[in-house]
Length: 394
Image 1: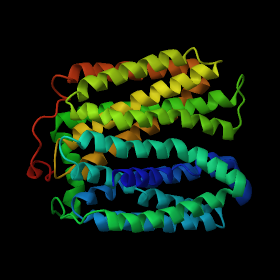
Image 2: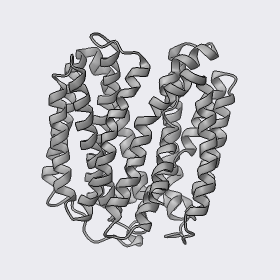
Image 3: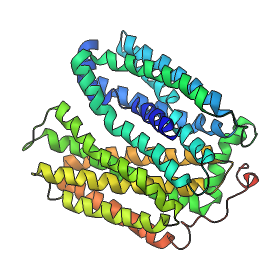
């Protein structure tokens, strides 16, 4: 079941990235400019933000054996509409709906935390989280290869079929669990903000997590610019293959969760940020070396994946009844961090190229290490799990 959850989480998050390397293909086929096609990525991301904020908290109050398949089937319908879209307007709408509904991974991750015992929760959550990272890194490569062989519409059709199959399998595999709590929908959504406001440990952890995603997005966005220009001049298909080097972070997810289970979560978080800082320093010298680029990718993805899963495992230990809502807060913060990182990469590249990007990445790592150093003996420490009535109200 752990492997199945990881697979489903990776497929769900992969739906967000199918279109990214295909914008040129889509623009040519639908007779629009590449700049117009770029709005497809924005529509998907905005839809995903809406889905995370408004739908993921339902995992705490609904039967997830039904909720997860419903989300997969609705995302399959959106994917099919993408494959058949006759115009850019229809495709924009379909991708927006896809973003809203492809949130199964954000429901399955806290479900895995609920099903796992206390002694194994970090490892199990790490495996499922590694599935998510695999989906992020592999989806662009798979999308480009499939589009080259069979056209851009094919990848959406195949993803729709896979979503239907996973809905059937997960409906049979997920045990029927009573909802952790019951409350009106408005109160449910308000309680997401309430726990952030009330719990200092949540706020400090969200800052670390958002900083990690900002650094991740900063690096990968700028790396595309670096590899497409002299001295590399790689085509899009080759640039996508560099994402496979980042799969080393998956191995850290498979192993890193054990650190949380052994009580080493905070020391390991600090070590991960030191590794990330080292990676950005090495990156400053990788402007003409593909070998150094690959080394940096491996180092950075191992570091950022490890700290991300440790952040999630600590938050899940805060409450047994509100893991979906805590995951909502975490995912929303990560989304904001990733958006800031992408925007910063574009601005920094225009202002100072790869040097400006690596300086900014180094600064982000130093900031994270300061937060970690100040919080590791107090604000970042998760104590006794909160009762549900401490989270419900706003």
